[in-house]
Amino acid sequence: MVSIIIPTYNYAHYLTETLQSVMVQSYNNWECIVVDDGSTDNTHEIVDEFVKKNNKFRYIYQQNKGVSAARNIGIKTAKGNFIQFLDGDDLLQPDKIKSQIEVFKKNPEVDIVYNQVRFFDDGKSQQLRASLQGNKPEDWLPELRTKGKEVIACFSKINFLVINSPLIKKNLFDIVGYFDESMKTLEDWDFWMRCALENCYFYFNKEDSNTFALVRAHHGSLSTKTRLMNNGYFMFLEHTLSHKNISAKNSLILFLKYVELFWDSLFIKFHMGTNSIVLATASILALPVYVLIKLIRVIKSS
Image (cartoon, helix red, strand yellow):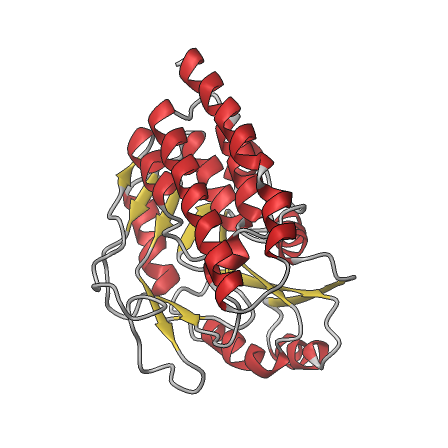
């Protein structure tokens, strides 16, 4: 069975479309757990309509604790052998899960199967593009069918997985652990990297006929690079650099990525006229020193 876990917070206006994309999956052996993270809109009423029509749907309410806590409670209550994450505003094409189950049947050594992703704007779910900004070729996604160093190297450069692309063996969480509930951003990148560092086997499913993970693009938010600097990348670095399987080369790549994000963040704050640049700088200046110390330790031990 596949357990589809949907954390949601005040996304009632999108949730019906999301749950309908679950209903039309060609793979029928699924359950869907909607974890309401303290919504104040009519999320409960929306989900209740689906629960009444189909007992494969379950509703769990929790006080607002964040997306990681919501996913974790979903994992812990899931009955399936596989986990499919799906945010409350995103979609799955009808053959997405079925195509991945077929890969698992043929390749029992695989731990995580990920599919192609496409992005869309509100009200335009038929107009798909390969990347958020539409500036990447359709085949930009790394086509991994391996584990170990190659996977770690890819995740050291970029988080190439959106949360609803992979289908995951549930027993991985016993090995890797759950999502870090203290992280407000990049909790997914942190989890994928931990999977890579624990030698999990990633498999790219190139099937592209009705099998995409679909991500709704939201506009008007702060720059992604500014958001990355809030606290997520710092914690991601701390977790990754302390792992025994991270190489000196990949540690350096991660450190340089931090430097790039740091200066881009300051430029964006200046461009937006923010008057707290000095405060922002002072609060983060100690981080490169900390990371450099970690890097030296890794180099010495490798």
